[in-house]
Image: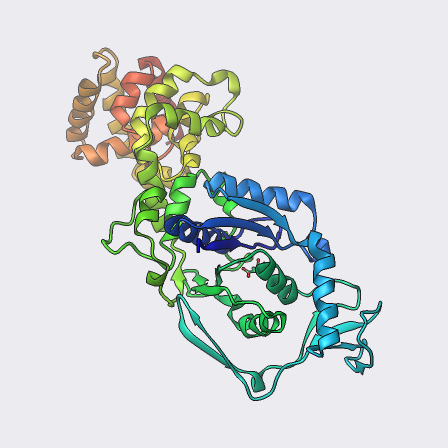
Length: 446
Ligand code: GLU
């Protein structure tokens, strides 16, 4: 039988990276096994049952390229079915009515203002084989009767979850470890309905650098935040795939289509996975480097267009196109782009204070060095190698090697110590007059 695999998010207004990883692992499992990938929106919480929250969620999944074969199915539309199952449980004695004070109430018909609890059997062991965690067992003596229907006439999460999995013929449910403790209750509900259990796989917790669970307060947890920062979707899915899983051959940077070929859910490990932003940036920069020029130019558009820090009329697309070749391999994210080129489109460079302090800490040396550079730039050929040579010579006059000698010049011209290749940038994208003016302005500020 073909696996039927579902991703069943509750819309929260943003897609959490942990949830995105769950979406991905279900998708990978479905694609790797030739199964069907189903999207079910668990929107029974009335406050969160808002179309814009769901749209936002679907938009992020599409951005990541995790296409689904069936759905989205909305849990909120299944209310009648949930009620019917709860009613059956009341009739066959699996569940009972109770009032606001949790007291059992006689009767077997659902009624307004009354909740319903499922009766926990005594002295039973409930076990199942989790694809990640292996054999997991719970004793029912450690569990209590639990609410499956609220007195306001809505189903509780576990009930809706179990009924929908059963009705949709779900065979596999891959999800976060935080949901593990609910499984025995769901299995009891499925048994009471007389249907088979899906196979579960619980993915390890995501933690930050301090080994603490990722939290909205402390960490950037929304996929949308990473999108805004200029991470590429293909880098994001690649990185998410590495959270708890690793390719057997150790080659971590690879496309989703390649991952599908080697993905095996049983290779996922139990230990918490560190969400390592530096590693993510490294992967992103690798994807950025490999983009064709055309693709790069398309993707970077928002950062040099609407979001750019310079006056629109100053922007010169031809210059930027030249710069793109020089900077593409240096970027960690697309949002780094303006910092690498802004000095070309601003009247004056936006000088970074730390860079200034670091490179101009001896004002006399800096002034003398910049003076030599300016003199030699006055009438030279305006070419990369010539400029480099002249800065080397100016450096020698104040006893500085090229590496150290070009730093104050870079800060004078670009405002920062880190940026595009300096000599090429000056020769290709700036005039002699512009460079000399910036050197002179920097000397005045010393
Ligand atoms: N709707 C649940 C959540 O977003 C997940 C349910 C499941 O995967 O079984 O936490």
